Length: 420
Image 1: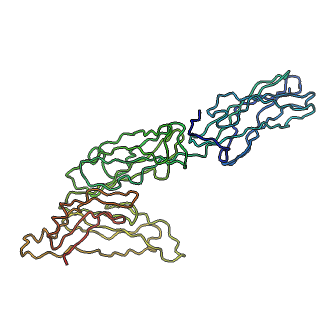
Image 2 (image 1 turned 180 degrees about the horizontal axis):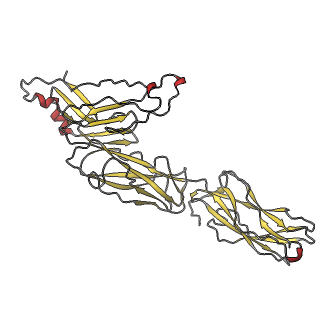
Image 3 (image 1 turned 90 degrees about the vertical axis):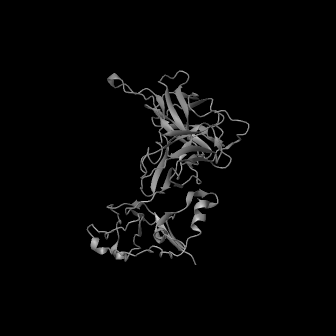
C-alpha cells in the first residue's frame, strides 16, 4: 500500500495485531535417546483486543534442553504480507535476539513490532515474519503471519431514499447502494458488493418485474463516505388483479474492506392498480407481514402469569367489488383456550350519492384506485407523488371510496370520503 499526499498517517490507536502460527522448528529426540537439539519457534498469539495501541511483542520460545552456550536467532520481515512496512507498521529490518547459555526450554524473548494507523479503509492485512538461526546455530527456519485488523470499516447499505412503494406500471426504479465510512476515511482498494433477488417477495419475476440477475456494485479506490451507486429495477404492468405485491432485494458477498451494514435488504411494494369484480382478501399484521387466505399466523409464546398480552392486530379488507364471505379465524395449539379473538368492524362503504344530477350512484360506491404515482422516503422524510388528473376527476364527486391507500400498518386500506 502506497500512501498518497492526502493520506496522513498517525500513531495507531485502533489497530490490533493477531499472531497466527504457521510453522515452527522444534528440536526432536533422535535415536538412542539423544538430547533434543536447541531451536526456537514463534509462540502462539496472546488474546489482543481490537483498539490496541503501542507496541506488540512477538515472542520467540526456546525449544530443547538447557543451553550449553548462547543461541542467537534472527527475525526478519519477509515482505510477503499484504501490509506495507513503514505505512501499516514500523520498519522491522533484521532483528537478532540471543538466548543466553543456561536458558532452559520454554524460555521466551520478545521482538517488538508497532502498528501504525492511517485514514484508509483497507480491511485485514498481514505481516509475514521469518525466524532462523544466526551465527553457528543450525535449526530449520519458521514463519508466522501477524494479522493487522483495520478499525476503519466500510459499510455498504441500501440508500435510505431508495423507492419503497411504486405504482404498478411499466417503469424503472433507481435503487441506490451507499458506502458508509468513518469521517475523513477513504477506500484504499476497491470494495464490491453483489445486489441480488433471493426470490422472497410475492411479486413474480418475468411478469410483475423483469428478471433481476445478480449485479456487482464497485466502489473504487479513493471512494468517500456517502458515495453511491445505482441499480435499476424494471417493473412491468399487467391486467391481472393480484393485490399489492413485494419485491425483495438483498446485498451479499462483500469484498475488499466492505462489510454489509444494517440496511442490507430492501423491499419494494407494488401497489395494485387493477380492479377485481370478485372478492379479494388483503390482510396484514400491524407493522408486520402480509397474510393470505388460509395462512397461519404464529402468535408466539405467551406467559399467562404476566397477565393479558397486548394482542396481535390483523387488518383485513376486501379489494374486490363483490362481497367477501370471511369466516372467523381459528385458533390452534396446546393453549388455544388462553387466547381470545376480537373482531372489530371497520368503516363500511361510503353512502351512495344522490342520483340527481350525477347519474351513476353505483359508480359512487365502487372503490377507485388511490391516485398514487410513486412513494418513498428521502432525507426530508416520507414523500408521495399523486396523479393530478385523477385528483381533479374526484373533485366533482359527493362521495367516493379509494382502495390501496398507502398506510404503514394496513395493507390495502380503503378510504371513504364524503363531501361536507
